[in-house]
Image 1: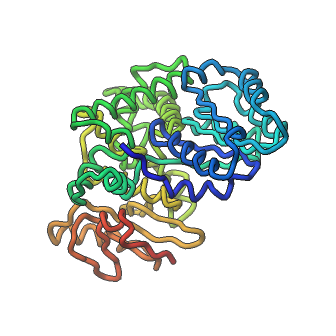
Image 2: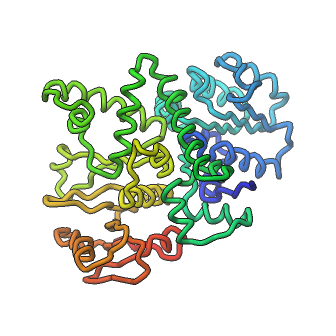
Image 3: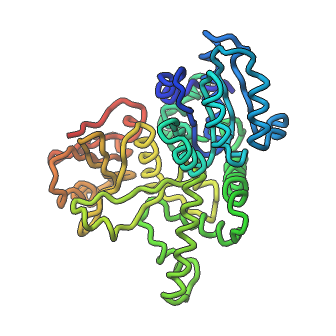
Length: 410
């Protein structure tokens, strides 16, 4: 099938094509980083001699031979023939140990613009920032948003029904290559395969002494609890029934390490609390959302599909992809699903699946009763009827995801 242009990301990266900053395109495996890299290459080829474009895929048969800093530096040195500007593209840079040393050397040794991709946030953000402070720019890529999902179907002349398509997206997410599969069973198998591949390559491949079975149990549990306030102590007790508080505290340290590993490989994202009283932040629980709802739901019986929390995950990833800072609002007797910060302005969002009766309407709109803040407030749901009330605006989720309506901040 034909790929769509990931214009949202290309628009952010284009201003840096000629910059000597190292452009790091990051994100979970198979989310489309390599395609974006190819689209950048195509754009640069329009104005640059192909001889001055160097492409190295470190996961290809040829690229896997370049497995040390010295080999990478020698390869690039041999391909640079003059002092004109070269555009260097390296896919999955984290496959080379101490890659940041090579990037620093290449950057200062040649007239070049460097683009890299990687699937580990700690390797790229951490090492690039430590060794190349102020000399690297990161662009995080997510799987398809729902609007990109629809654009992909339109480009490939596939039938579109927004309601049915959204339920498919809610269930199987937006990993681009899953659309090549012919049926639901194959989609599940593909997504589960990605999950296993990420764990093997980006967790077990980096953390050699990890207890693999224990890690997988924790990973499945975290995904099953996505969107809920998360406590490592509670998770320890849920995973190991009957253990003492002291044993749970010890186990919670391991769970926190596992959470870091899941975050590093982009399988989950941490949503932090946004308190109206800053001192309460210290005692707050975190929430985690999967990078893609399909990655959660593909685990079948291990993870129950909960429409509301899956909806929250879709909305969360959409908001992140639009560049907002996203928190959840912790109140003394409850919480608001999301607090969005855009510069020095903000708004609040409560997410519901359907509001089928007055009781549900009162619950969702009533969640804002204790918010002493005049910033705009929204209730998102799949209801097509506008239920706005008391100065709180209702937004249909599909309309929002298709950019038919937008948010106001104050």
